[in-house]
Length: 155
Image 1 (cartoon, one colour):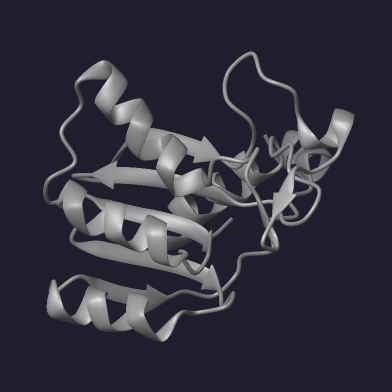
Image 2: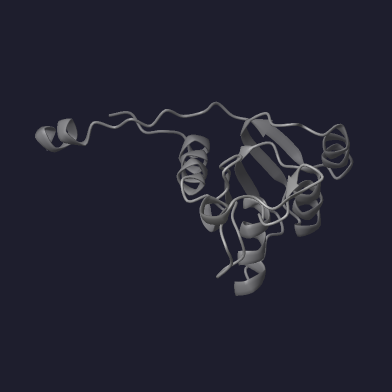
């Protein structure tokens, strides 16, 4: 079996995190990595202990669900909560970050954003990433369908 690349590995982690999303509009996952080690992960959903959109519906104002915290923000807040530095780190996100997440990513010192899918890529976010010298790289989606039964028979 051929090994997957680091980019595929970390993006796969983000897709796995997205499966925990409680947002009914778009499931997003984010993984923050430093020195090829995962330092935090997040998915979009409600605050800890709060009502979830999958249970009570979205709370939409101006076409935005205000109940949801974005995956990137959840991952960054996890680092802040546990005192984990993000300067020089990378973030892998299933979708292009929104403008607010873009600003938070820049402020946190993250130097590279890897994303799988375009999603309302805001021109100002692109401009801010460029000005801040944050590399933004779209990576191929990874279809990870591993036949575990086949692997077990081979070992």
